[in-house]
Figure 1 (cartoon, rainbow, N blue to C red):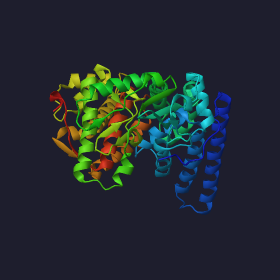
Figure 2 (figure 1 turned 90 degrees about the vertical axis):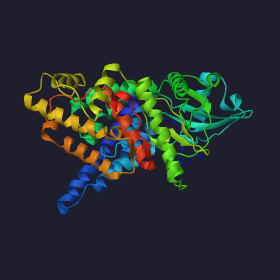
Figure 3 (figure 1 turned 180 degrees about the horizontal axis):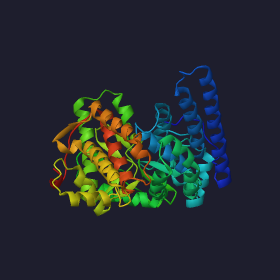
Figure 4 (figure 1 turned 180 degrees about the vertical axis):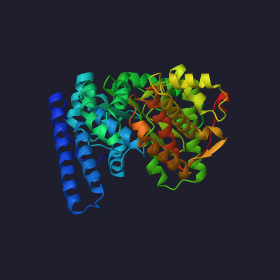
Length: 439
């Protein structure tokens, strides 16, 4: 379906232009707060719903114009239902499916830079309007002979603005995520590294081909082929994958059996990557999956892949085991290795954080503790959200003088929460395969 949003004829590229846009948005948000508190003097019972709605619109409009890593951070935050007020979730979720696309002349400029040809010269046909536009790039449909392609073009200036954008988005993230500065700084390096990788289209094609090959034996999965001769560091050409995104597919009223088949393919895909490859497609948002007419699940984006270090993998999944048969000394070392506790903590702090993180990981691991799990169980997700809310508002957690948890956990946790949320949307019941040692 063609993107019907108004096209952009330019993107602010320089640090000064982008900083000015952030400052302007910050002033708008500040004005919204002033207006809200002025109204609250007159009406003390006034909720923050309208404030959140206005701020979400102002921030999203600004980020969607800037595109790049700032918009990607908004997309990441929208994946966690417990991270943001509903108004932000609803608005930021748009970054997963559609953002204002770039106009065709800017697309032509990119092609001339890398191919010395316009899209119309390289392909037999090429849609002048993007069929999909997101945070890092936009997709056009093209043909050459009998073949139909998806051509992803990266927005100008995205790669060079990652570091400066993350510094600019930091004040928004601190307020929206309810994090302290130590926590945010601890994870920003990992976010920056992954965002820089997402702008490396040659790395994306390499990883996409590797994972597709390694997962080719899994039933009901489909992957596009990449075409190096029609690709470049800022352009990816791959097979066009026919079908519907999850949200669209669910509107066709599929049977429970069909939903379970898609859910099982998704679970098996992630199981093999995490436990056999120890690297994983770490961007499980709905826009990266297409359900084809034959019912197969197609995975279309490999920009964000997390390589899981062996020591982190072993410690993390040892805590997920249902019956944790490990002595206290070894268990304490796992908590230190995963950076949940440190020798700077008091005895009270160590006891608190060991208890909190065991509870959190055990809850996350519940699907692993049974032969099959019904992800339509909304009560399970309420438990997760309530635990997250309780921890984030606990004084012991809020007053901690250090960040908690290895940086590697950021994308591993994000992957599992994203996977679980997708399976919940599908209302799927799946056989929760796991390695023998984890059972």
